[in-house]
Length: 120
Image (cartoon, rainbow, N blue to C red; front, side, top):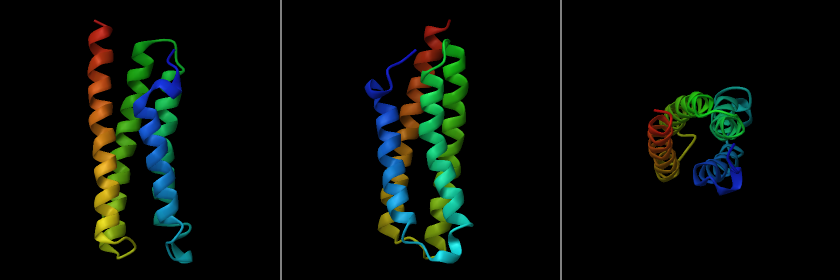
């Protein structure tokens, strides 16, 4: 079991979720149950799956939940690009969010490799 507050990857995913919620709150009301809802679910899934994996008793379980978090990060990246294409986000906002997402993806990849090597 890992201490969440010591996991940089979890802290970064919380920062991303906070930023995404701030930005999405500015979307038009007609997007409340559409793209903004999807974006919120994806970003929450990243942090939540990291947390759930950290709370599990084995490295293999943590690996499983990190994989889910990684998939959610790619969903989120796609949704941010769609929001930009629909002019719901400015280019600069989308680029900043995508940069944060890519940083988290790299961290997940590195952590996955570490856990896989530890489990050998």
